Length: 437
Image (cartoon, rainbow, N blue to C red; front, side):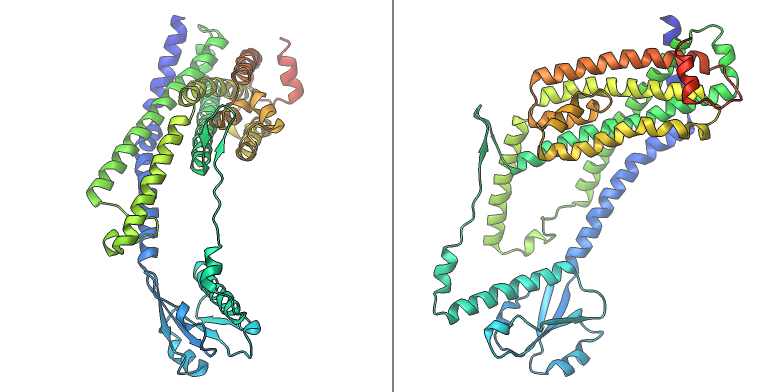
């Protein structure tokens, strides 16, 4: 046990004192915060950009729909005609919309064109199309001598409330929160396994190629050395993730407070809004916030965090043991490529299945892959926010622990033989032979 502690300490200090580890620990939070600020800045720039769109309405029926917004200003050039308007518009405005004269309302929607120097924005075109569709529809209704206002009064919005048989209510916001929580935990485990599993493999290859391993193995059992490397790298990785999370949170808080980054969902400054609209938005925001807080309370938070710890440790130990065995079996990192696909395949499948879990978290596919040990650390964590019976979680964890013990035992056998093998690329057949030694 004392030797194992020494190995863990050595691996931990070697990883933490590495220059690349220190640089990435410092730079990663800065890069993440910088990326968030860049996205916010670009969104603000896009929302503040005002486009001027000219239009020529030869029908004299659709001009009233073109009212200015915070991002689009409309200019009526119908009096000039389309030829003269195009000359005046080119190079001066974002584009020009042409509505030709038609004999009847039936053909009013035909022949409408938008001229611009560059490809127009899809959102702008969709906005114009929606305005024209509503206006033409109302004109057709009026032509049939129907009351447009009465017809509008019949339009109804339906929101279906959901509740399970136990009396627990949910909403669309709750589904999004469950999706984000499950996906976040699953993706975190995926990234941790990839980054620090390969770190264990590189550490083994480095010591093997430098022949230091021959000295170490004379005083330490191969299993202790492998387990020490796995745990040492795991502790270093956990420390790095904690530093990233804390520093990124502090930086975002400071920058948000100092620069006062505060925008609405539409990117409009609050002070420029109509008071009635602002009150409606505030009431809507408060209502949505209350629903979100209630949905967070309804999440199985204790089960999620407890399961995250178990699956985090179990998933990392399984895959890092495989990575350590691969590192011991080869002489260089380039030789690992033939073994990487079988290792990566379950992780890729788990991420893919995770997306289907969102649509059907209790289906047979989700259940099967949440019990299969090589995919359960990711898939089960994506299912838990949607509610999973305890017996399924217990079975999944027992299978995970049993598989971990079995894989560590197999990996230790390969590690024990491969760590002193040089000059020959092993095949799957030879690895199978090593398991019998």
